[in-house]
Every structure is written in C-alpha cells, then in structure tokens.
Amino acid sequence: MVRLMDERKTISIASVYVPNSFTFHLAQKDYDRLAPLEQSLKRELATIARRAVASEGWKLPGPPEINLVADGKGPAGTFDVEAMVVEAVEEAVPEDHAGPHTQLIDMSLAADAELIVVGKNDRSYPLSKDLITIGRLDSSDVALADPGASRRHAELRREGDDWVVLDLGSTNGTIVNGKRVNRHRLAKGDRITVGDTVLEFRRP
Image 1 (spheres, rainbow, N blue to C red):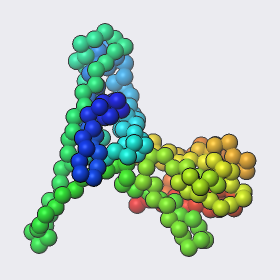
Image 2: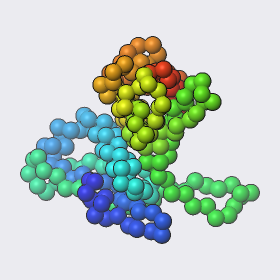
Image 3: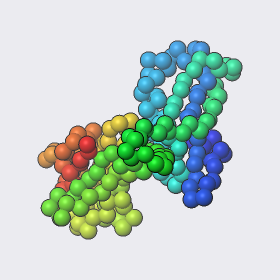
Image 4: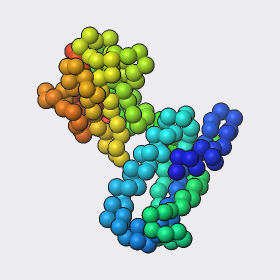
C-alpha cells in the first residue's frame, strides 16, 4: 500500500499528494478468515497510511479509505491492492458566506488532540502526526529540559481513534495519573509525568 502511495504520488505547486483510497482484493478463503477483524484491519491500515504520509511529508486529498473484497484472482495467501485518489467532499457553505471554498483534508496534520505542559504557561503541543516522541533530545517532538527525563523517554502513538503512551525504557519511568505504566490508552484529562514535568492529554 505504501509503495503504491510512493509510486503514484502527484506533485502540485506546493505539495505532494498521494492516493488515499485502497481496495485489497483477497481470495475468498482469506476474506472469510479475516472478516471478523475487518473493521480493526481497516483502522490499522488507515493508521499506516497516515503514518507514511507524516513520515514522508506527503498529503492526502481526503481521509484514508480501506476496502476489503473477496474477488482476488490469486491463490490463498496472496492479494492485489488497487490505489485511487478520492477527494474529500466539501461541506455546504451557507448562502450568507458564499464564495470560493476549497478544503483539502490532510489527516496526518490535523491535530485532534494535544499535550499541555501543566504549570508552565500551559504550553501546548498539538498531536499533529501519528507518532509523537517525548524526551530530552532536541529532536524530540516534545523536547523537555528536565534532568529527570531520559533522552528518549516515551512516545505517543495514534491507534485508530485512540492515543496510547508507551514508555521507552526510561530511567525514571512514565507515570500516568500517579501510576507507573509501560503502555496506557489515554483518556481525556489523563496526566503524564515525565521526570518532574506533567503533561495533560486533551482532546475535544
């Protein structure tokens, strides 16, 4: 899927757009085996597409669309992938706001959540890609000048519609709501402690 995105990218004036709609043509036997997990597979594949877009600096013309169909021509264990560009449908514009209206949705850059550094002017870090690193390294997405934080302390990963925090083997551990965790699925208002820094997870 990611290889097709790369092969079929389109370079515009200021952006590189890639296909966002993928149809996996499976053998009937494989489709029957995977059918109970279809929605989970679709979410995981959409996450992979968004992650590739964020990593390569591409853009999507609309949200990722994943389809699984049982019409594969090959033997069980093989599949074909079809990639297409499907532009996002524009929302209706009220008459009193009529005028030029074009919207391209970049799912990799649309922040649906953020981390707030508690007690330090409430500094905000929008979660605008699918993998967010936290640590003392300057290259971290959330770089902390905190001696209690490890160089690569923790990371946040988007999993479908959810966010998960993972400890990266840090010296002092990653604490969520007062409890040390290796992996934790975040809920609105959860507080992550890294060293002496407290980060609050917020989303609409």
